[in-house]
Amino acid sequence: MPRSERSERLTRASVVQAAAELADSLGDVNRVTLAEVAAHFGIKIPSLYNHVDGLAGLRRDIALLGARELINELQAAAVGRSGDDALIAIAHAYRQFAKNYPGRYATTLEAPEPDDVELSAEAQKLLMLLMRVLESYHLNETDAVHVMRGFRSLLHGFVTLETLGGFKMPVDLDESFERMIQMLLAGLR
Image (cartoon, rainbow, N blue to C red; front, side, top):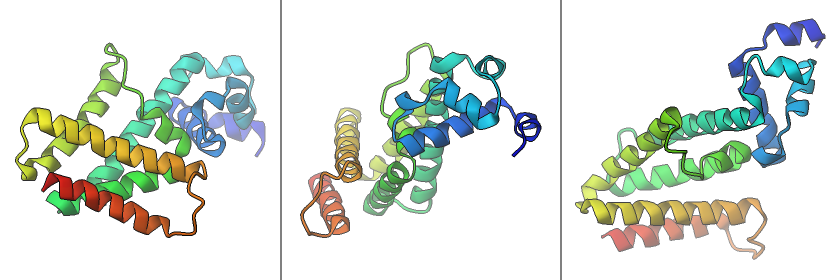
């Protein structure tokens, strides 16, 4: 694509989207550079500063995009479901998101800075979604937090090992994933 066509579509959203796609292809947002993003658009690095707040700002914007997309996927999976069915659907959506968007997924793992209102609001949405799903188990708030942490840890551990090639035994990974979720659900009951 000629440079003039690429730079015509240069917006904050297009820069963040391109950088997120690059992070996914590299598998790590920390490997994304402003030089690579600028090259994608056929522009010089200083032109990016009209759209993003440097590399740190770009990585934060990718984290915001990733958080919003992850929440949308999990909410869509949970719609019309409750209890075990909702948790199972959320687990599968989480796993698929992590596999499809490894760079973006990695940005969703770190808790936002306390002064980042926008990113904190997205993190809160995720917590509220899980809290609503856990209501059917009649847990007190402290127990619900422990379950959320355990659920997230199980999912993250599995998808990390899966994407890094940590499962080499000739046993079906999908069945292992299902059994892991069923063990968690048995503990909730």
